[in-house]
Image (cartoon, rainbow, N blue to C red; front, side):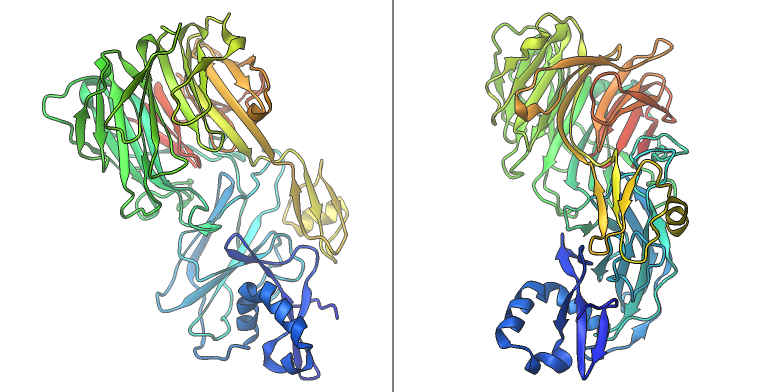
Length: 576
């Protein structure tokens, strides 16, 4: 018997519209709801085998529905909703924050529908779901970014109710909404703003490089999880090291209107008398525990200098076995307990280590150019190193002892300075809305219903058995390298034996590129503080996203969920 609401009573029975569990949270079933007789009155009327089969597949989500209908009994009472509920859009994620009571159990309901309530979330609403007992701030991960600054993607709406014990929830909080958008600008527009961080306050010398050590990412603690956490490491002349924690209770992204809270930087303790210039930093964490992340971090620099730290604050000098200037570092950590550190430097130097302390030097036949940067991608089991004279080296198997030059670049003379890898393109180019029964199907009515969403360029159907948003998110598997003049080399669909091709970034006014990174699209930053974005990294499809709010930057670093840019004086900005 089809139903249009979560609960229907008939002849002493309760029929439930059963949602399903996905990525650790309960979501409404796409394609209609299945009827299941509930425990309360009707178990004895259903064939035993049918009940067993249905409960086996629906039991994880059944708890939420039974609690909503009161079938679990009332051992507590409905409570007031939390206060100050806010929603913030991030890069492929939305954060919700609130203030509440520790004694109250809160449930969050969400859907891409402005008619959302705590009672109708399973009634065919777009991408509806429920999070049981979330903590603030709470993130909804794997979202689709607003595809175009001139159009408006349907917003995700949220409401939260409260209860004690197994009682039904009280009144839901007023609806709040947000739309995911790519980090790095433009602003104002669909992209995230750049927010000034706490200044480092360099009084002598200059900062040269910036590294990031990830601990958690959006969704690493479940589909609804804590904001990304990790450690930024800034390095510079005379052995300068400053670190800043990115974590929910200190500087987690998406907990303020401007997109993220400022970072707070602290000077590190380097060995007495250590004065070598440092150019790059990187590392890994052995687990996702932000209280005890198990850091292993290295900073590399002039004359073969390497410092190692287990906490980001206290550093020890270790022997590299070389005297060449070391300019780039990356970590391959498919198994966080046994990472592979890869360091590159002048004269074709490549060093590897499994602990950041003991290093092995690899001689690459015929390669004597200075290597400037390296990036390792865990899923593809590949590292790419770049440097002067058009050199692009690839190694495709851990522990990365065998390297080969990209043949398409043997005639190139570019002095490559940076490299990035991108795969998870969450910036949809086309959207198909699959609408539930009763939703308007003409453009004007649809736009009004969704609070101003413009359906121009999109297609949609009114099939009531299909509820959701189909997107054209791409698995792009693309490497991009860049030189200071904005010339690029890129390898698309890297897993399918494609050849490297060449493009460019349209720099103006004599600016030079200082860095490149990737979250859900590639972003490059030039020496005047102008950022350029390219969704897939291909060709010349780079567009300016505007001024990042920082003069004379020297480094750009992606945390995987956002970007931080740094200049030599210690000014730094972030976009999430």
